[in-house]
Image (tube, rainbow, N blue to C red):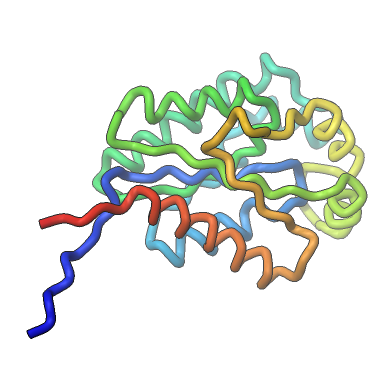
Length: 194
């Protein structure tokens, strides 16, 4: 008789933040991940204030003070999604600086049953300028990409909850790599359950 396999389940709920500068594909990747894993999807851009949207559409980069309230709203929305019973959630947020990422990390500080993971969509400035120039009807204009790179603090080894995905490949390659990063994070949290 073959031994029965013990089902495995993640020990925690998971929050995946899809991050990177404008044009890296955050929304596309996040929607794909949310669909694949049946997680609620939170579009970070939807939570910018009208003032922030106006400022960006006029070509003015946001400052730290413009972003703090927005980041706290995103953190709160993620907490709400997870409290609602979801086993995970997906959020888009540029999270260009470590301090911004630290605000989102408060979700796991506030609830020890939640693990926060950043999927950093890594790209060159030239590639993202090209992509943003091709977008129509979006408030983030091409010249704003440079301002985002100017303040970008790329995650390093001191942020082990960040998984980098290179976005220079095809759309399907990027989606596959992002899904593999999510699966890897969940797998590390999986343990046998009786």
